[in-house]
Image (cartoon, rainbow, N blue to C red):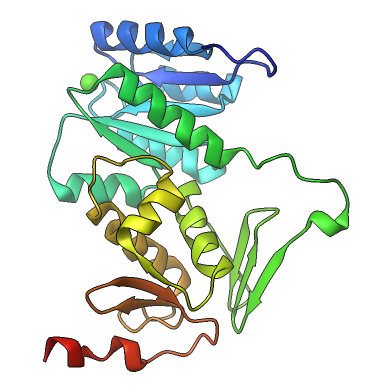
Length: 253
Ligand code: CA
């Protein structure tokens, strides 16, 4: 159903396979989005610079400039959500897409309805809910060596500004907003992804790994995002590295 009360969000589709591009456009337009399309990487990048869409759907294998490079160049200047389309299925490819800052990925062949619901979910997370005006709206979660500004969606670790993808930020905000709470992977999927992510909880682990790389001094010995053995994760508000009692592997001994 098209949204009547807001201007249509603009989605840029960069895809060289015409049948797929046409199908994606059809479904997105039916869902009320305005769609721009490009058939190769360079055109896609140029269209992106000119039109500044709200979201980019980016095929990986493209003529001219591939999807990785387009993603890298967009990320060099902007946080616009990027959803990758990929025919590749190895974990390595997924992770390298996420490392470059893609917010989500869909493996071909995919259901256009599923794609539209992913686009909606990403945009819901990317657009902050109607915040009341004024300084009272600014919310900063402060921990030793870590500041999370949930209003401006800005993060500083040890006084240094950290660039996070939309998904990484949402994950960190969920952790930091509920310190000491032990999250299961399912709970994080529901909280952060907000929809049934094909039931794949490894997605959480992949994002926690990329988040730790950016936020933690030593990702192998995290201060904040602690692994809770056999359960999930817990945010330690004291920012103290080293295994806490709950991390000890006595349960597995
Ligand atoms: Ca392609």
